[in-house]
Image (cartoon, rainbow, N blue to C red; front, side):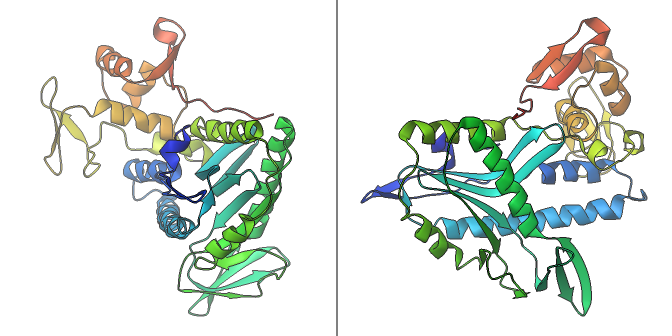
Length: 341
């Protein structure tokens, strides 16, 4: 997860009042959760092909974001800058905001949407869609410009809450060299990735509008909500019955079932690899896929382990928050979501 310290996100080399940066983009939470869902969802499940497609899209999106990061790193920024990759926050229980990259300086906020889509792309004004054409086949996507507008509205609400006024700019970036764009709206900031640094450099000459304290407060707030964001378990968000998932303690190499050979040794039934501490990793699957709050009974059921002591011992070694008493105790991860109201 992104750190709440600027130095963890940026690696500055200073000269003449400007810095170069290195963006450290974490692995997408959604990518990790989808990978675990694929490991536990039977291949014959009706939603398996759709989940596999989502995972491929997430992979492509991540590599597109990494490519865009390399071009952002070309830019000489003013010394005070926050660059937050993969920003998530929840405005309220019904609205979640996700921003691929947010750049904050004393002069502006830049919200970036990065779309790693190949082929010929056509913007359709009505309905608002982005259509990809490959081999004369059309596939519609939600319009990324609408997503940018929604994200801009979400950031505006945070600024209002903090009583901070600063211009918000938007950019839609296409990182692939195999993309052709047609019917792009002329009044929107749409760039191929090599054009993007020049746009940022123009923003960097804007006059400062934030004080030192406002800049620090806003940066800390954005980084804090991102660090503490916890998304819904995938079975809930994708409408999958958790009882459909493969149960047991699974191998980290091939996702086959592990067989316990001794107190500390587990053997994979398929690839024969040995694991000495697989239970915490498999308990993490429950948080990602099934519930935000789990009990020892839940772990015993989904991991197919009959010993309460074995589960209890593993839970105590994990950094979890505990609520309740005895058999009613529930465990949850400490990084709970922060709701912005």
